[in-house]
Image (cartoon, rainbow, N blue to C red; front, side):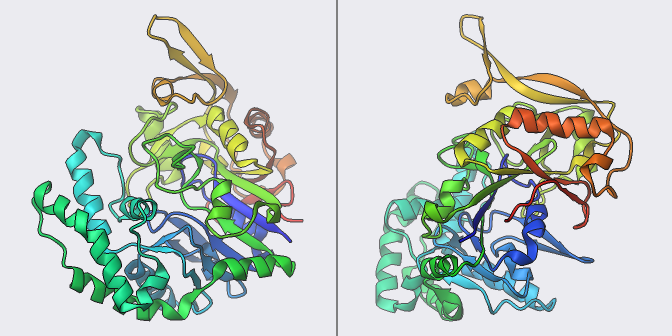
Length: 433
């Protein structure tokens, strides 16, 4: 009954494909459990590179059943565009299963997302404008549309009308926009539903049966721990739960069926969008990390904010996710640095001028926003490590860097990414037994 959760330990873009590759052919199902097409990850197969946004990474592997779980919000238009793009490159997408309980991103969700973000001005969250937040808001407000609603015209029209009643008032009176037509929207969604129907299934039942039969299911999270709506840097977060607990609620699989929780972290830290980032670099070192690591978003193309490794964040990820393993990626990016700072704690100045040292994540987000990193410097290395396949063959200072990160992260490091290619990886401990 090997259920494996794979998540990001930082703010996303950590390179989860490295861990997926190590689990590789032993996986029977890959189930995406949160988020929508605001997430992006790259899968490299041979000389081919695939940028995925909504589809699970298992879509590329012919022997894997890819699943979009109930915790995902699905934009059918985007899903079909992604499927068509892959099929034009010879990838078979007929195995895809989409939860009948997943919520649907309607065209009006994208509209609301964009106008609201513009209205917020300097207080904006930094969303991708793809309608993710408004769809999750409708879900919680109990006016959302689920996949199975797309197959009943009268029922769907009632739900669209209920959802648009308040939204049209807001669009017209607050944002000076035209109201959205209920009938036109219903017709568009019905047409998308007909196209989506062949993929729809009771995915909770499918996944539970698979686990009971001894098959391996990889639960794949979008975004990462620090963007979790409950446990991240609120309000600068996503609208779902990309932490390990979200894998259960987002797929309908109970926690007793989970065996491993693997998180991926870069050997430094990046972030896209607004919000506090204690180790962020605003100088030439930050530009150097961005250039060396090719740090631009897969989905948005936005340049990522770059900073040094933050052990406070990684310890927190270990705590809230119950991590069993950590995969450290992009270690090669640090090659050439004489000294490498690592954040081991935060210093926060209080209102009375005194200072508080935080070894663990502050609960108060104002304290986190004011946190100054306390650095420990480690010696760097100059040797090319991309062709190294055994940990003991890494430069001594590189080994020491990894061992120190493991010590201060409260989680064993089981694999290391040493370059952009699939074989640029060192396995220390097996990620699947």
